Length: 103
Figure 1 (cartoon, one colour):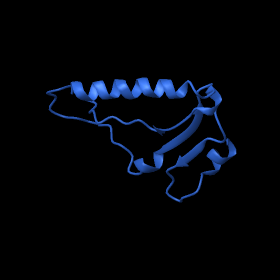
Figure 2: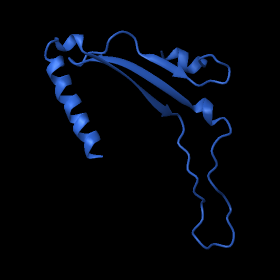
Figure 3: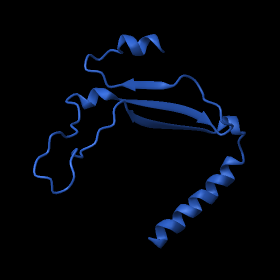
């Protein structure tokens, strides 16, 4: 593990040196973030040891349709470059009218 940490630190040091050769607006990074429209729990609505449980939290059957991913390109100066890529998980393969109205 120590060897991995040492190599990572060397890589970081070399990268910092290389980055100093470029202006911040020319150094870019791209990353994705996934989000869920609806958060669900797998907990019951009863206390431990109760004899009868009258309800429980259940995830929706179409959980896959309740998520989306965004992808940004940002430079070291802090500016977003270009458009944000948005990937919606919709059953029809199309953006819903409510989402489309707010784009």
